[in-house]
Image 1 (spheres, rainbow, N blue to C red):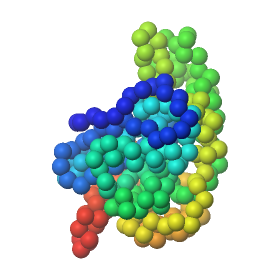
Image 2 (cartoon, one colour; image 1 turned 180 degrees about the vertical axis):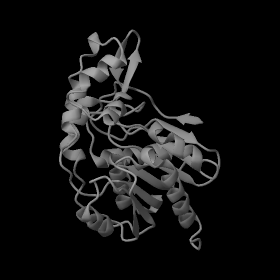
Image 3 (tube, rainbow, N blue to C red; image 1 turned 120 degrees about the vertical axis):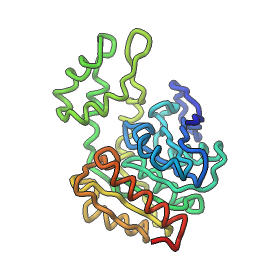
Image 4 (cartoon, rainbow, N blue to C red; image 1 turned 60 degrees about the horizontal axis):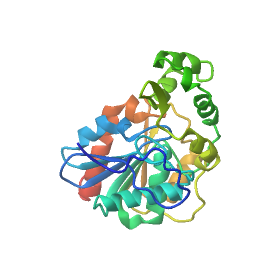
Length: 278
């Protein structure tokens, strides 16, 4: 697995695109770019990337303020789309199929709506180009409130966060961002910047633009993220979108139903790369 990118954890620049941390899985074939959701990382998609890598060059990117990518105070969708464009240019990738989950789905939509010539196909996973309730503020505040200076192990962190984040699966997902640093712990996400940006992140930039290329929306049947309003918004911005609901999945279909998602992605990629394919 090739790794490309910059890993400056304390870069708090306010403006300008940033070279992101990117890991490439696969050596040949058309490029496929995958962007993770809020408080996630590219490695969340590692298993699916490995399944696609036999026929594709899959690029797993950590968005700004996440994973091994640099930090910045600004976190608008335009900023993040510019970061992705810069990183792909650095990798010599001019066009790619773009896949994005949740926040990452909004980033790939922003990129496709602004620069459709760069996007061969678009997949958004359990998200729509609409404004959502601010349900993430409380978990982020809980992470910010954890006293890392007294933390002896991850079990203590899990116990301390349980009252504020009672959902065990969500808590364990968030705790993937807690990493050892010498004799202590640190967060590998920029919680302060994310908290400040939350009013922006729950929204989507106003636009009348459309992406008229091939598009797929994979939606968790047990998730409330894409309702009738969300479907209408997807169809307005992505006229060719096919919406597939997975009854067995919630907001993380790639983790909850990876085999089904992989099968859908392979079929979509065949349709993008071989227009005559069924």
